[in-house]
Length: 345
Image 1: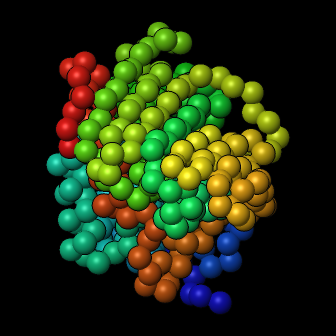
Image 2: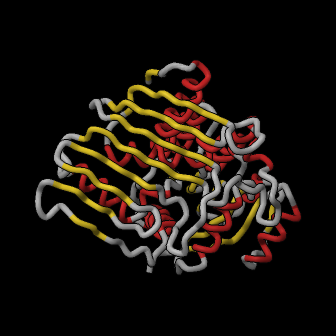
């Protein structure tokens, strides 16, 4: 068995990731959660009790001094992530860094530079890269089975509606504070889809156009967004993100968007509920429906991969550079919406 990796969680603002990772760590033998840090003592105490943690810090700098600590998961509000990540890298701790990794490209580049200079493993939790159906899609596209890709379409909705500031409250809190979050549905959930479509197509983006709206709730940030991308090879991508409320079927796994890719030799569709990839191809045997077993949740695959990167000195599937690339497109989308015109990258 690989050596044990001791992990600490910094911040419980983005409690969705914090709780999901903590629960998953319990199922992975060579991972151990040893500490949590949060400025809210009550929130930290509740979390620590749930996961039987005896070590709680109000100040994350104190957590980073723990000699037994190998890695951290950063779950602070988005405006604090870059500072915490740089401090963690300089403390020589491996990092699973929540998205967005910063609110500006300049800060994101500083994070990457800090991680590179210390040699720690730095990973972004782009969960769809660990879902077998999207891995299959990427393989299909890269093998040229669909021919030249014409366009791709991703749509995802926050199945819980507005995010909640904590498990026991209904208000969105910092998630809808533009100073702390950097935006609404697009930067919260749409950044996953930006990475997914770019990862599946394997191409860079050269132009971004976006329409944002506050159509559902009374907010200072958008709750709906549509982003159109023009890729370097001429392909067109469209992303829909929303904090709309949609019923959750029993088979649904968190953030599994629907995906359609059309090429000159066929198309494929990923169903976000039953999880198949349906291929309509001109070339046999690349046609029909393929189902995937998600008995191991993507987040468990992701956490096992993170541990393996540390113990086996491997490069993460989703690096800091990938985080910068997704952030650049999201920020360009916000700029496009403000200008009412496309933005060139």
